[in-house]
Amino acid sequence: MKQKILIVDDEISILQSLSGILEDEGYEVIQAHCGEEALDRAKKDPPDLILLDVWMPGTDGMTVLDELKKLYPLLPVIIISGHGTIETAVKATRMGAFDFIEKPLSIERVLVSIQNAIEFFRLEEENRLLRNKSERRMIGESPAVRALWDQIKRAAPTNATVLITGENGTGKELAAKMIHLLSRRNTRRIIEVNCAAIPEELIESELFGHEKGAFTGAHERRKGKFDLANGGTLFLDEVGDMSNRTQAKILRIIEEQVFERVGGERAIEVDVRIVAATNKDLQKEIELGRFRQDLYYRLNVIPIFVPPLRERMEDMELLVEHFAAEISSESALGKKRIDPRAYRLLQAYSWPGNIRELRNFIERLMIMTPGNLIGPDDLPADFRNLLREEDGEASWLQCETLEEARACFERDFLARRLEENGWNISLTAARIGLERTHLHRKIKTLGVKKE
Image (cartoon, rainbow, N blue to C red; front, top):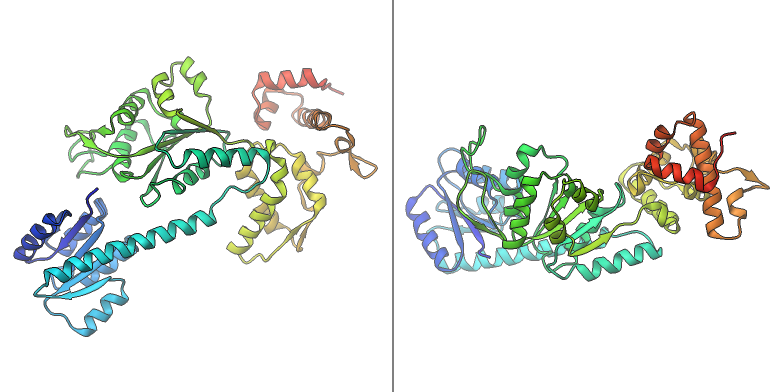
């Protein structure tokens, strides 16, 4: 893919001569005649590098440089000037310019500076990605997490589409980012789209972009997410919430890697890897006519399931310690320890909100607990009431097998929740995150009875 260079100069001869030379060198060139136009073009379609004149009518180059660095800190900018001074060069460098070249321009020096700038900032981006890889990881050593990691590492180096499923709050977004970071596309961007958060009438414009005048309010051409993700990864979160019309267009792009902007007629080719995620049962959505079967098969080339927290309780201690350390470093709360007795209560809870709920809960404990040790008494009453103490231990801890302990806990938990909700099945099911029919089966199977 061609590197895109924006040349900003009020001299037409400079624009024309530089554009011709850079195009011959294989670069894609766009032009701006003043500072205002340069900022406008950079905001709409960020280039890979900018050649920027200092002295221009209106907004001067130093002001433009300052604004550009606020918008895109890693965007390489080379200053060119016919009135260069050491003071100006030093100031430009301190403001983030990569190089300062005086006019009349030496074409050889310009080309070398461009190559060096692009390579330097490419390495900076790679280092940033490597730092992200070490910072963002799946926390856990349970069999469920190890199996998930194995799937991610196998899927990442390929270009195959991936469909990530799992309940809300389990970490589907993190799994998508890890797939991108471990892929061969990790020097390009991962662009995220929350399909559930975008109104149906705007999602096509959001994904594919639009041409000027395509609809009321479309005052200028705008790139969509597929354009921005070119060469990288597009993460379609909550893909089950897309309309059938948008699904048809997504299917075509996956098959042909071609699309048109809203209101446009020109076919635009892209190289984008699709990673999608949903908390819905897409098979059921297909039966109900709300999701295309052909799109499902296209997305589901590599299926990855992110397990709920209740299926990986072995990771509780690691997760809590990680969140506690993270929250401590982000605030002035100081380090706090969790009493081992509190872990039993945390593991007894079903966590319908999964990892997200656990993280928020630990943050609340860190803030609201006055001491440096968080014990069972610091947990809310709901947690303390989960266990009936018998000789200092919970009843389910005295069971011989894991299956017996799980059944004992679920029986006590459901009985207490039903009692709290006046034995209203529908209300209880909604509050604990189960379907009504599933709760009915649980009550019957476990022998839960109203006292």
